[in-house]
Length: 416
Ligand SMILES: [Zn+2]
Image (cartoon, rainbow, N blue to C red; front, side, top):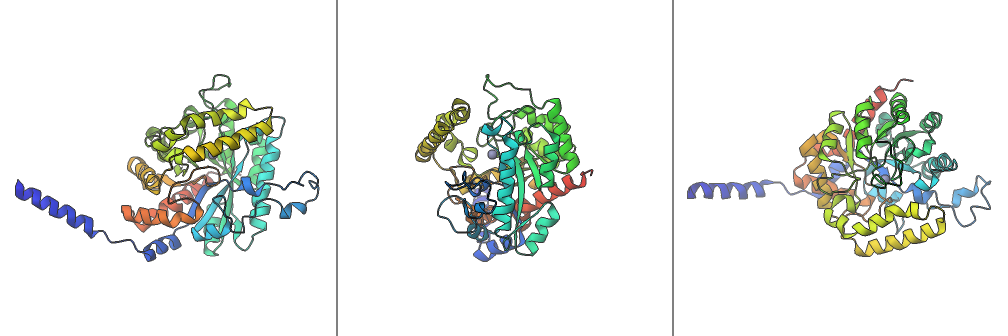
């Protein structure tokens, strides 16, 4: 018995030391060969900003050229700019065409979506055409990568953007939108959201309504990915039952590791994977680490109710949002790079290497993990995954291969 123990210890030590050290060159080699596709980035909320004179020059199409955040210049703030995207080896970005819940009235939602689409096409791609190219399918992402450019794609965040009109859905597809997150944190006229599911003052539908199901089928027919991040669990299961194409979770993590409604349960992840879908791990500290979520739980709850509380007072809403953000920043225990690896590991364990991808939510969240603070830090993740024992081939799948496979499956089902 003693001899057995000795052999066991010797073997364990040998195995521990046998793992090759990960060199910078190995990291670079993986980053060069992978196409890193980040399926959710919110820098568009910055580039769409107008300066103080915007209201006076609204009709001057050229005036907006110089207004707002310029993604091309290195910035000390935020998570995303061109130099940092290059440093991070990012190959493709789905820019969020984010439409806040406050636009879900008076026919302002589609207008906002069009503004956000324009900021991708005009402020990001046209303005920096040497570095970005608009991509509308998997082949165009690969072509951009071959040319050394960053592929820019678009996903609508918040189904209220189509104002319940399938014609607008088709218009948005024609402008290049390739996924739509069925809800944001607000339940809309045809789909329940996870963001307000416990709020009894909100009229819920028990998942997708008849119109919601028709919209999912129309997205299938168009070849637009159905994004189930943000939706209520019942909405997710309705999508699994109705959708003919594999859905995407563009920016969600695992509820088994951080118990928040925005994350997916193991059952959901397995069902998504069985349909050929991919869960793209979100880097928001709250979604990665229970400790981090708990450290700001009361503030998060209050934040979620703000839009409704100050529905009729946008100035107060802005002020209170900023105050809460500042308080959260002080109190929040950050997540770490190791947490991101743990979420990837968890998905691989329960659903396989083909089920996981990256949907950072950079510039859409306040707190990012230590070691993965912004888009320039992706090589740290590459190194951590290599150290964990993932092969270069595994990492190429996680970074982009799985998303490309999913996009091709959706494109094949297009009936136009
Ligand atoms: Zn989101």
